[in-house]
Image 1 (spheres, rainbow, N blue to C red):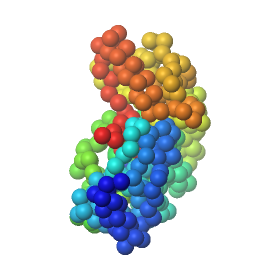
Image 2 (cartoon, rainbow, N blue to C red):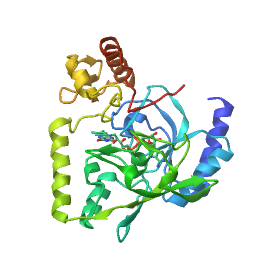
Image 3 (spheres, rainbow, N blue to C red):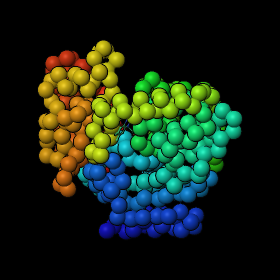
Length: 309
Ligand SMILES: Cc1cc2nc3c(=O)[nH]c(=O)nc-3n(C[C@H](O)[C@H](O)[C@H](O)COP(=O)(O)OP(=O)(O)OC[C@H]3O[C@@H](n4cnc5c(N)ncnc54)[C@H](O)[C@@H]3O)c2cc1C
């Protein structure tokens, strides 16, 4: 190992120790993402609360150490190489949400499905369609997660972000909430949010939650290693991307340990111990080429591709 790498490791270790942030080495993306593939990570640092996370991001930046935020890893495909940056895992920011009337304040690491259930218990509506989306509140905010006619961005009152080592609250109206994309800039650490929900009949809320859940169970592979829909729906097409891929007869197509799900053609699932990120990527690129050739459409990735280069 070169002295420079040693020096960088020593700096990271000393920041983590001084701040009391749990730090791990030797993890792989295959351990911490839902696709269960991807290469080695130098360091995973897991701050325990919003203030600590904000200070940690700042200290790493001050030392010019590259880092990336991660929630549950349910929307990331990291390549098989060695990733020489720090993962700041925000899953530890999971204090119980605070309900106040129609509003709820929640930290970024809290589970989105749990929040949906909590909101329903308070007879509050607005996020019941998001119930089956795996992942954290932070991950949902980052890409404006949505399902069954609801998107998280539409109920965000304020977002807490890390700036200059501190927790800063910004109005949700300052953020552009687009289809699976927001205006948060790369490197922005999201610490939490206050959502503004509305009261509704508990029976109706629970019926809508049940409906979303059963639709999900009927149409998506469950228990499988996936990252949800791999590609966005194309604005130029009235046909959903899953249907488009299905019509090309690609369900069940396999490349190494990656398969187009026989249940939902826009899901790539990985199978077996030997599955590699490069299998999933090769399959995804093959889908993109077929769709381009036969429909003239450039599919855009919904899953985030993280490169080690
Ligand atoms: C079976 C299955 C079904 C799915 N269904 C849906 C669906 O219906 N609708 C939908 O929208 N998505 C769906 N997804 C995708 C995924 O669950 C969502 O995108 C989810 O919101 C990601 O949350 P996460 O915590 O796992 O984020 P991660 O995968 O950990 O991260 C995703 C991105 O967000 C960034 N990020 C995460 N946390 C933070 C933070 N605190 N601050 C700054 N950046 C952060 C990461 O850097 C990364 O860029 C599905 C996935 C699976 C596996």
